[in-house]
Image 1 (cartoon, rainbow, N blue to C red):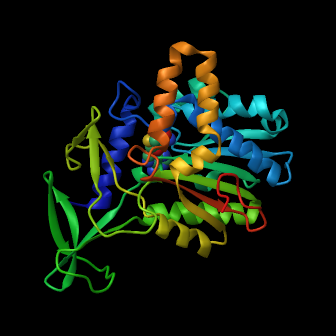
Image 2 (image 1 turned 180 degrees about the horizontal axis):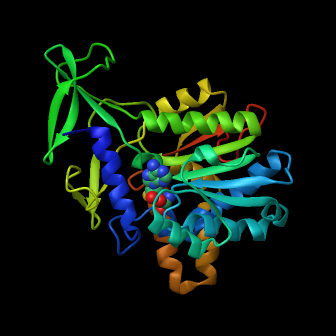
Image 3 (image 1 turned 135 degrees about the horizontal axis):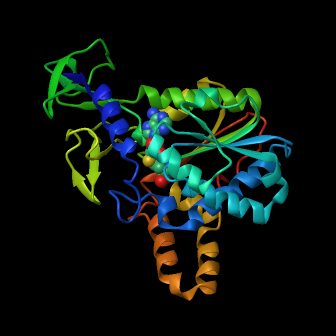
Length: 325
Ligand code: SAH
């Protein structure tokens, strides 16, 4: 028997160790695997943010959970074109635990440095990116039963409820609460970093702007819904990100917080549609794919509303691009 967060961590590690899960052929498709324009927009965002930081001569461009390295490769290409000074100042750092995915990242971004956790990133000004990273970090689940809280454990592919030391206060019978301590710890760590060394962290993920009670543990396999308690390594297990909790943790740790903003609004403000149309015009054979991806990333019924953008900044940094009021 294992507490849910221990099971989740084991399942995620086993799954990502396989490495080949992303993309059209894999179990799920993330934004950078849908269109090059996603990473390009974030590269331009990083370049503008570097300027707002006072164009430091040395800056870390770091990504947490870079998957196949696609986002960073696209971001670097756009940054080199648009702002060579930024491209010359930056060094790429990846936070990644999967050896197989590190290899995929090395193939796309050869000059990067790798870290097992964000704690060992260099103590220099940084622009940090994370897309669908936090949703892969473990959660705990509490259920209200008979006027007390119980906690979910996993045994033989099923939930078992046991007494817990946690007490989030009174709630209706049967209510389920999720707690993502490692996620809030990452937000706090990034917030401390940008507050002490300068810079900004941009977190993109799916989840509600305000925390909502309920069970969001889920799994996919071959682009279809699967059992999250299935044999570790066979399905991709995630859960919604509680952006309100991340924002609280980041503020306590000293960062200024912008958002969460719906991803559709954020990407539209960064020019996702215009850039997609430009590329489509230049490459008619890819036009339909490019425009469909731009639509899916921004449409409310696609990934435009459920996905959010949250930015944690050094307190002296001006309002970041895309987060205009
Ligand atoms: N950002 C990519 C991949 C998202 S999948 C994309 O958008 O396509 C989650 C990524 O986080 C994978 O690269 C996975 O190996 C990595 N990851 C998961 N848990 C991690 C952990 N605890 N520490 C570091 N990386 C982790």
